Length: 395
Image (tube, rainbow, N blue to C red):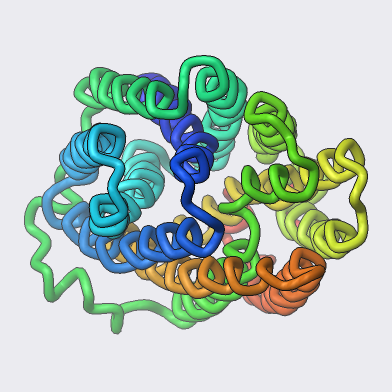
C-alpha cells in the first residue's frame, strides 16, 4: 500500500501540473473559450467511452498493467501536443487523452480494494485521496510558476517525465490476480447476481454521478480560465488559488475516516454536501478575487473530502470481480455529463453575465443530487458492512 501511495503522489503531481497548464497553453497559442471547451468536451467523451473499455480490461487483464499502459499513452500524447500544437493534433488526441487520464483513478481505486479489507479500507482510501489532493496542491503551485517563467510547453514536458517515473513504484505493487485471471468478458457485464441492497446502491450512485458530473462540468474543469476571465490573474496566482482549494480537500480527505467515525458517515457526508450548494450560488455574486478564492476553496474542500467515504462504502458493496466495471460505468456517465456541460460552458460564458447563470444552473444539479444522497443511505444505515466500515456511526 505504501508503494501505491508513492505512485499516487507522483502521478497526481504530474496530472495536476497538466490540468493547470494545458488550458493556459491553449490560450497562449491564441485559442478562445469556444475551442477550449470543444477540446475539453472531446476529452470528456474519450473519458466516457475509452475509460469504460480500459476499466473492463482492468477486470480482465489486471489493474496494474492497464495503469502502466495508460501512463505511457498519456506521456506520448503530451509530448506530441507540445511538439505539434496544431488544431488537428489537439482535437484528435483529445479523445485518447481523456480516456487514459480518467482511467487512472478508476483502476487505482479498484487496486486499493484488491489489497485491503473492510477493517482498513476506509483509512487507506482516505490516505490515498488525501495524497491525491495534497500532491495536486504541489502540482498547482509549481505548474503555474513553471508555466509563467519557463513556458507552458516546458511545464507539459515536465509533466510527462514525472508521470512516467511514477510507474517505478507501481512495478513493485503485487496485485491479487484471482479476481481477474479467469474472468470472461460476458461475466464482467453480468449484473443479475446483485442483491437488493447492491442494486439500490449502484442505481442511485450512477444517477447521482450524472447529476454531479453535469453540475461540476459547467465550471470545475475551467477554474484556471474562470480566474483569468473574472480577475485577470497571472498563472502563478491562479496556481496558488487552486492550490488553496487542494489543501483543504487534502486535509479533509486524510481525516475523513476519523470524522466519519466521530460524527457518523451519513451525517458527515450529508452535512458537507448541504454546505456546497450555497457556496456555488455565492460564486454568481461575489466578484472580489480574495473572497471568491476562499469560497471556491471551501466548495472544493467540502465536496471532495467526502469522496473517500462514499467511495469506500459503495465499493465495499460491489463484488470485487466487478468493481472496475461498475466504476467504469460511473465514469462513463460522469464524463458524458461533463462533456455536455463543457460545451455549454463555452456558449453560456459568451453572453453578458454568463458566469452568474453558469453557477446558478450548477447549484440546481447539486441540489437534486443531495436529495438522492439521502435515499442512497437509507437501506444500509444499520447494515453489517456499513457498520464495520465506520463502527462509530451505528446510531
